[in-house]
Image (spheres, helix red, strand yellow):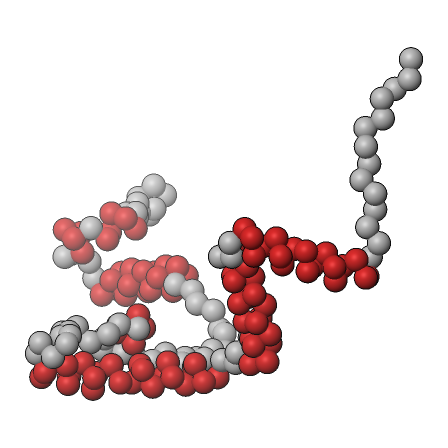
Length: 164
């Protein structure tokens, strides 16, 4: 009975290179199938429907000048270099047009009539500042006369000495 039972070699031992040279075709096939099973068990994936890619609205620019609102690099002023000044006008004209449009869209906070009223009062107050003392007293007297009609003046309160 002991002679009938043959000792089998382990799988790890059979996978070694020097052992595979002497293996017959059946054992080679069995080892390959076992390796495929191991690989297929380790490999997993999810069966999800394909996700549609969202459209991206990305604009690619070669330069970062439009992003930073930069002006043309070479500059010349007061006719020092007329060629460069012409280039400056051409290159910066786009940004100036946009600025003019923005300025046109913005409305004035103060209307013309209100500005005129403010200017009138401002002229009067600044004019008072530079008057001589004599003229200031005359204006104060006139103001008091006008105010006396509208509001009666109160008598000035005096200090009363306490009685012993």
